[in-house]
Length: 117
Image 1: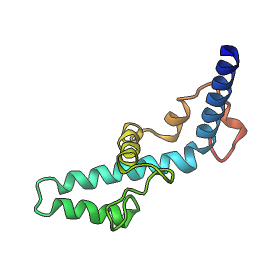
Image 2: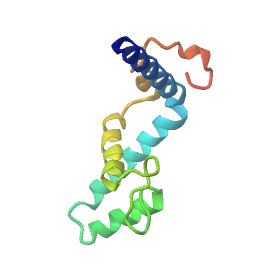
Image 3: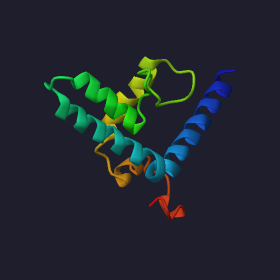
């Protein structure tokens, strides 16, 4: 039973890595940049009167939240805190280039995907 669990885990992890690798340039890098831009904007609002409203307006305009203040990042059914957690975790990668993102999985040959290298 355990061997089967480990095999399934390993196969799933490999598939996740491949999905990340294939989408580093077109999905993840732009998302991380959007998160970085959000962080920069929020820094500018610090200490300003009405900063909370300005942050909400920014998030609504850029698709992070809706007018009900619900976060929109992540799959359907996630809690607001889980969605905010995705944004918070993305900050870690926000300064990574596409190459640095791809280097997270150096064993993958990116030359197979000309539009991703």
